[in-house]
Length: 175
Image (tube, rainbow, N blue to C red; front, side):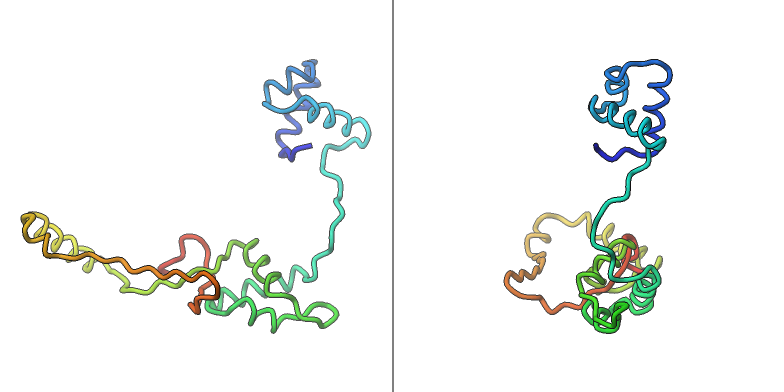
């Protein structure tokens, strides 16, 4: 059964209680008939529509360790996941993997990105750049033919590029 939100589950059950057939409810909610049928069946069988507990390997870190990982990376944005994994120990005093650290940070919204390298522009800088662009916008094509614009890119296929990464949330580039 596809994952339905709590609101959608209760909405479907409300439509069923109004007396609508399963096929009509599935059309209105754009769901498969089997999904609605199984939802109703689960309600009659267990008296609840919440998800059942699923099996799976338990986490090797506690919630407290996860919060500490995130706090450490927010305090030291340039800390690598492998360095952090060497510092963090599981309950049985084994190290956790760097991939585990990356997953925990990713769940909290942090991503490893290239740090911003360049001048931080203040309002005065922006104003001066706009003035320069307005002055030079009226120049003729002969002037701009002698100007070369370049863009440099690095491509690294087989190994790590050696760049330092910074852990940050989306929209925090210039903070």
